[in-house]
Length: 105
Image 1 (spheres, rainbow, N blue to C red):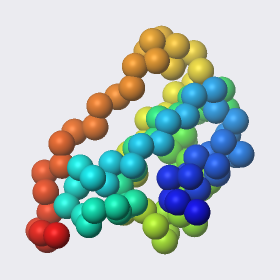
Image 2 (image 1 turned 180 degrees about the vertical axis):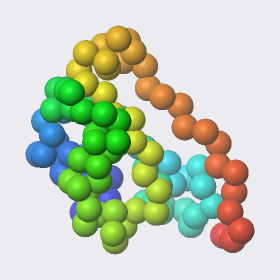
Image 3 (image 1 turned 135 degrees about the horizontal axis):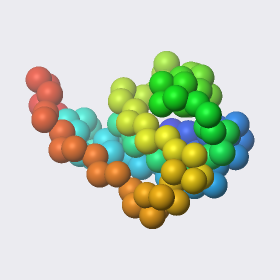
Image 4 (image 1 turned 30 degrees about the vertical axis):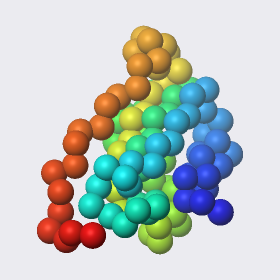
């Protein structure tokens, strides 16, 4: 199973999000073509209600623990309650450009 699909399935099963978008951003980084190592997750769920940002990130990290330990090099998290997501008018955050790494592929 593709890493992106695993992430989507795990988060959907555990957090029942109103909104979930998982983007493979590996192509924006200094990795081999076709890599699945850098991801951005935008998730909105009422299960984050009353939680601070760090608690939300910790929760996502627990859900993705196995994938994080084996498959993912970088994970950008954008976590919202359903109400916060509506206030953002469903606008996706933009990832910064990669500054490069020391290795060239």
